[in-house]
Length: 222
Image (cartoon, rainbow, N blue to C red; front, side):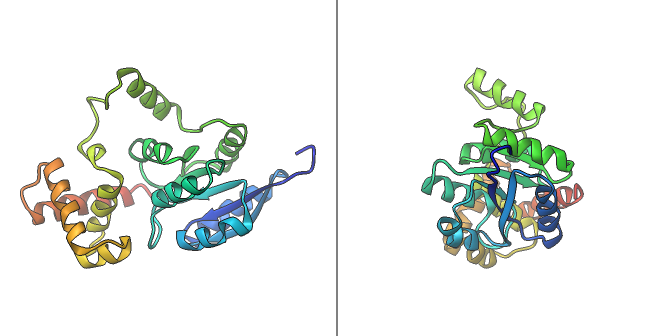
């Protein structure tokens, strides 16, 4: 930037190569300074006040606390923090969720580096960055005052239900999900019951099969 001030950036992603790629992209731009990289949300929370970042780049799927929960946690502590979610997950499913949670933008990991920089610059100017397709979907939803009638059943899941659904699809047991999300086993079972109802699934076996298929389709986009 012309005044020589660099925007301090923290990257939170559990894939070392992804963190390295994001950092290199930003290091090539004069206005950004990557001051820290973390692979867990909990580490970012611990260092947040000390580092006082201008920007944060956050992945959704993290060990322990999810990126979505991290966004909610940080924006509750500091309304001014600007967060861009960069994830491999389907933007049409997650972009609206992260914006509602307090993030200022969403970029797919498959996008080129210049898209990342463009998104960060727009966010720093006070804007919100999503793709034109998602922007149109969000505006249509606002205009109707209702959820899109054509939404997929997965869209009906709450943020926490979606986390439980994804972890189920990755082969985690109820106890493992409870430990990862810091919930009781009874609470996880309650979420699973709600998921079955919303997705019109008869039993735990159908839930597992459905979740595994969905998780595999998500991974196929990597």
